[in-house]
Amino acid sequence: MLFRSFNSKLADSSNPLVSIIVLNYNAGELLLDCVESIFKSSYNNIEVIVVDNASVDQSHKKCKEKFGDIKLIENKQNLGYCEGNNVGIRAAKGEFITILNPDTIVTPNCITELVLAYQKHGEGLYQPKIISLYEENVLQSTGNMLHLFGFGFARDKGIVDSNKRNRIERVGYASGTCLFTSQRVLKKIGLFDPFLFLYHDDLDLGWRAAQIDIKSYYVPASIVYHAESYNFRWSSKKFYWLERNRRYCLLTHYSKNTYKRIFPYLLQAEILVWIFYLTKGFVGPKIRAELDIIKNKKHIQQKYDELESKKIIPDMELIKSFPDEIFVPKNVSGGFGSYIFNSLLKKLSRKAKNRIIK
Image 1: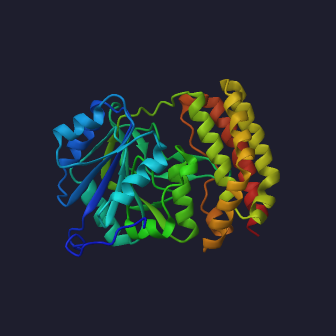
Image 2: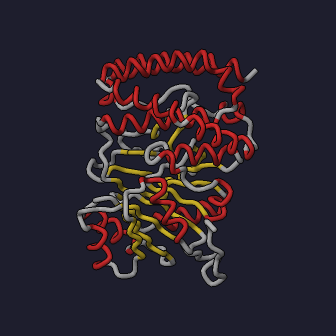
Image 3: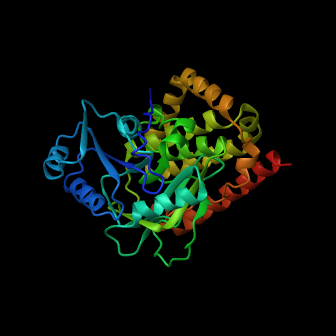
C-alpha cells in the first residue's frame, strides 16, 4: 500500500501530526540549518523524515547525529526529486505532509499557518510565501502559475516584497520548495511522477490536482526562506529536464482534442522556444529533450490514458484561469528580450484560448 492508515491518537483534529519530508542530496550545512529551523517551529506535533539520495558529503549522517529524533532513510542511489520524496511520503505517519527543500529555513509559525489554511479552505495543495535567504526581502514565489503552453513560473520572483498579496488565494500550483497537503489528497491525486525525475514535478502534481477539482493555494502568513538566489542558473542539464518535462506534461494533460486545437499556436510558441535555446547556446539539450519524448511515446500514451480516465474538470475550464504571459526575470533574457518574448506569447495564448473557449 502507498498510504498508511492513521492512528487515531495521531489524527487529533486540533493538533494533527504533520510529517515533514526533507529530501537531501549533498546539501551540506544547509540541511542541518533546515532541520534545526523545523524543530524551532511553534507547531509541536511533527515527524521529520530526512530522505537521502545517496549523498557523498555525509550531510545526512551529520544531521542524524545532531538530531536523533529524525527518521533517516538512505537511498542506495539518487532517485531524483520525485521518487525520493515518494519514498518519504510512503514512510510518513502523519495526516498531513510537508515537502521541504533542504536549503530552506522555516519560520516558527510556518507549519501552523499552513495547517490553519488547510482546515479553513479544505483539501488542496498549499505553499507559503517563499523569500530569498540571501537577498534581503526579495521574493522567490507568491504562488506558481501555469501557462497554456506548459510553462511554469514563480509569481513575483526577484521582486522586493511589499506585502501586496496579503490574503490566502488560489494559484496555478504550489511550489515544491515547500508544499503542504494531506495524505487524503495525495491518495486522490497520486504521488509525484517518477518519470519527471526533477523539474516540473510540482507543476505536474498541481495540474493533476486541478483536473480532479483539487485546488492550490498561496498562504502569505506562512513564510519560508530559500537559499537559492532568484538569479537563474544556466545549466544544459537543467534546461534539458525543464524542456523534456514541459513537453511531457503537454502531451499527457491535455485531451487529444484540446491539443489538436491549440497545436497551430503551440507550434509557433515552439519556434520561439527554439530561438531562445539557440541564443543561449542550449540547442543540444532541446534536441535531447525532443528525442527522449519520442523514445518514451508508449509510456506517454499510458500516462495520458490514466489521466484522461480520472479527469473531472474539462480542459477549457482550467485554461480560462491560465495567464497569457509568463514572468521572466530581467536577468534571464534581458528586459527587451523578455518583453518581446512575452508579447508574442501573449498573442498566441489569446488566439489559442479564443479557439478553445467559444
